[in-house]
Amino acid sequence: MARDGKAVLNRGLTAAREAKKDEFYTRYVDIQKEVEAYLEFDQETFRDKVVYCNCDDPFESNFFKYFAANFNRLGLRKLVTTSRKGSTIAGMQLTFDEYIQGNRTPKRPNAVAVEIEEVTDLNGDGARDIEDVRLFLEQNPHRRTRLQGDGDFRSPECVALLREADIVVTNPPFSLFSEYVSLLIQNDKRFLIIGNTNAITYQDVFPHVMANQLWLGCTNFNVGMFFEVPDSYTKFHHIDEATGKKMARVSSSCWYTNLDHGRRHRPLSLMTMSDNLRYSPGLKGKEAYDRYDNYDAIEVGTYKEIPSDFDGVMGVPVTFLDKYNPDQFEIVGTLESSNPDNPYRTRWYTVQDQKDSFYRRFGKAGNIPLNMSGVINDVKVYKRILIRHRRPAEGDNS
Image 1 (spheres, one colour):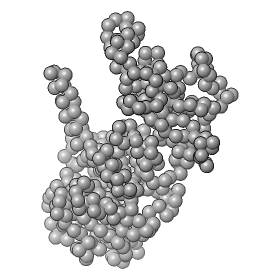
Image 2 (cartoon, one colour; image 1 turned 120 degrees about the vertical axis):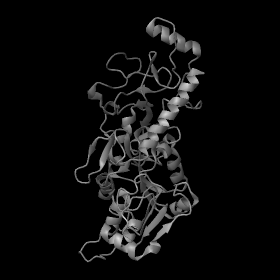
Image 3 (cartoon, one colour; image 1 turned 180 degrees about the vertical axis):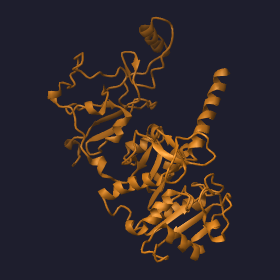
Image 4 (cartoon, one colour; image 1 turned 60 degrees about the vertical axis):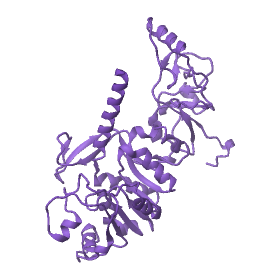
């Protein structure tokens, strides 16, 4: 009973942490850096596309600001953004209602949708930017629509807008990331979004990685990101000198996408025979790669040690995904999979097996849960992704 109560408490604490992260807002510079990387690969990535930001308050969101300010340079056909009712960040800046009414009193706005199909130099300053967007919406209030619902990305109104879009770009709620990704893929949408780094191994997200429907973006993997947080936050990293906003650092954040970019086609340098790290069956010691006790695969401790001359399955760290070239490798699973049909698993441990393993390691009674991990000599390894080389003989034309 106590164990169940602790589990419930842990789930509650996790939910609370995720809810907090749902109030974190992306910096303009991070959006700019990521989007520009795709333009370097293909200048036409966003041209004549409908971009939808479906978790963003107009003028509060840097996603909206970036795409509105760069509407013409990117060649967008339309920019659509929808907000949630009662957003926690609303009121920190001037909202559209306050702008046209001259009322600067912070308030919780209703959910709205804003659509932009052109940005012209309305204020005559020689530039076409976010200030022109403000004027456009002031002069064309019909482009701002109050939603019937609360603006949740799953609502019928927002799903209808999603279906009309070409590319979705936003920072969705971390606590709903799996559901959010599923909605995008079900509707066959291109996307560029931010999520928890660990989400890539979620059981309902990783299959999309294996199916080449989702991969890592260009920037910020394994280094974390800074986010703007509401003034009410008491714990934060620093205050941005340029904006005066409180900033929090989330170390487990990165970009996810299904937009192509140049990094995913860079060949990864591999170990060669002269590196003296070739796989050799039966060879023990530093010259051999360990083989898992419960998987038909070898252990490769870092992506730098992937052998070029091994045709079987290899277990590599999750960080490999930042180097993953789909022309060079195929992802075939994970070591943590509970799928009984995993073709690479060679052994399921009984309760007695796990007790025996504990005794061999520590010389006393106990139990080591071994079935949700790769195992080498009774020792569980960290999370691993199973990969193998793509060969021209398999039909790969790269």
